[in-house]
Image (cartoon, rainbow, N blue to C red):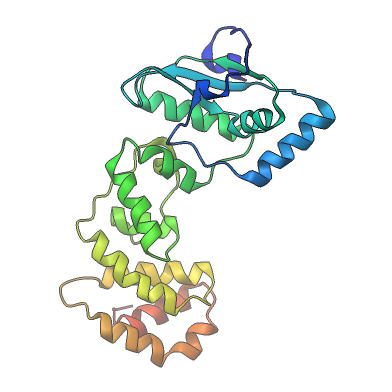
Length: 248
């Protein structure tokens, strides 16, 4: 798989100079439990794969060697005092680095959306905003993305976030995130489909005449019904009319 990606055969190197490898800021953090599993595997079967690394100056302005894939393996080998087998591949840009890092990581343990956001935020300011909003507001990523791109009628697809093309196009996004966070917390017991129907109605209702206090009061008034809701056309119509006072 790696050979198909880089198009040529590369030599496996070995090093016990653990400080050779620098931390790649856009990679996911080390999980000590996963390291322990790697140590158990090494003790039972030995080392059956290589770490993938690259040497570049595009990250910090000076040439350093970074682990792209296999940081848990490298950590486990360091703890065991064993040499690290590694292959070096070439990266041509920050974008190329992130794409190869995502490809390689997904071949073992798939990235979730936060892994992609954490990687792209290093070179994409809009991802940094999305990362900040996720830490600030108790709203799932796809809902934040809907608000950020002003797409109320459909669920936001994950591909733009994964491939680095996500952009914030809604100038009111941050204020709307704050308001919908209140709604999201209040309807926390509802199923995911109902929450998306609330989001849809909220985004259509959010205009200069929108009254957040009235919406919150309406949710309280109809809370018994909200708790029993399941996703569907009738639910959507009820939310629009009774909570957000929108036409059918």
